[in-house]
Structure formats: structure tokens, C-alpha cells
Image 1 (cartoon, rainbow, N blue to C red):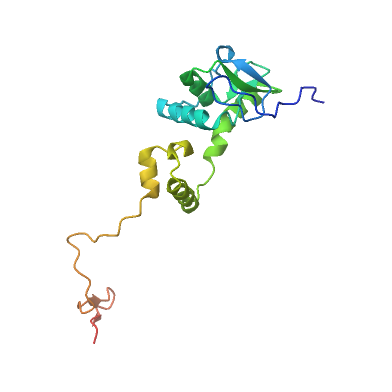
Image 2: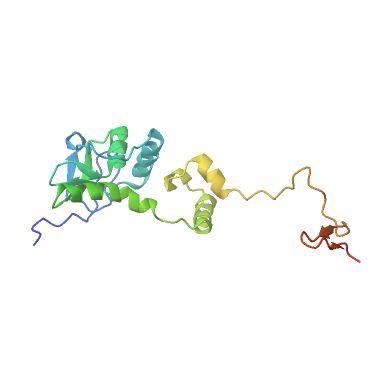
Length: 191
């Protein structure tokens, strides 16, 4: 039986000029008390951290940082942790998780990102959503795409262009064929 306290569900009043907490969490923890997992295989480039910081600033916290009660390390949310550092936040929402073994903890550390990578994107549906957001004058960075990626997704595909050495298509082009076995010849020219 789990004797942990239920997670807080109500929004927490934001600190002055800081993003609100809009997710379930166990506790608001001082940022400096969080310990990134030294075995985390996921690297967070500055561009990703900057996008996360922008999203957190706009929407508030939608997901807490997950910390293992077994090791005390961050298990999920390293990018959010880095974004909080960039934003200069004093406290972050933390969800404590119990793991029976070190292997269970490591598996969650890897699976947290890997399972999302296995999803298949419906390009047409994504393009439609992004187009609607763009039409509404919404900041598309908040959808997690940089300008170059958005340009590629929202651009109409170019019309196919024949290579320069490709002859023009003409229904009257004579075509000659020969059977490689019997050497029979015939023409595909229209009559």
C-alpha cells in the first residue's frame, strides 16, 4: 500500500514574475537541491533549453521534474531543470517516484525520452495544426519547432522539374523496341 501523500492538484500562486505551476506535484523544491542523474544519456543543447524556457515562461509548469526517492537523482525532466536554471527560478515542482531497484530507475530514465521518440508523426495532421496556430498569430516557437523546421513543415512542396537533359514529352515520339531473345522489332509510335 502506498502511504505517500496525494499530489497537489490546484495551481500554485506564482512567485512574482515567475511562471505558475499548472501540474500535479509533491513539493516545490529549491533548484539548487536538485541533482541531475550522472547517467542521463540525453543531452540538452542550448537551443532546446531555450525553447523549454520560453514554453515554461508562457504556459507555466505543465510537467514537474521527476526525482527518485531511492537515489535522489532527477529521473525525468533534466531539460526542464536546465530551463529553470536559465530562467533563474528559485523553486521547481517535483514529483517524487519510488523505484524498487536501480535498474527500474535507469529504465525509466531511458524510457522517458525513448518512448516518445518511437511515436510516428502524422505529417499532414501536424502541418494542419501548425498552420492553424500560425493563422492565429501564435508564437510557433511554443510548439517546439525552430524557424527552419517550421519553414520546412509549412512550405508547399516544390513542383517537380524535369532535368535539363530530359526531352520534352511528346505523344509523337517514335519508340523502337527489340526483344532480347528473338530480336523481334516493333515500334511504339502512335499510328
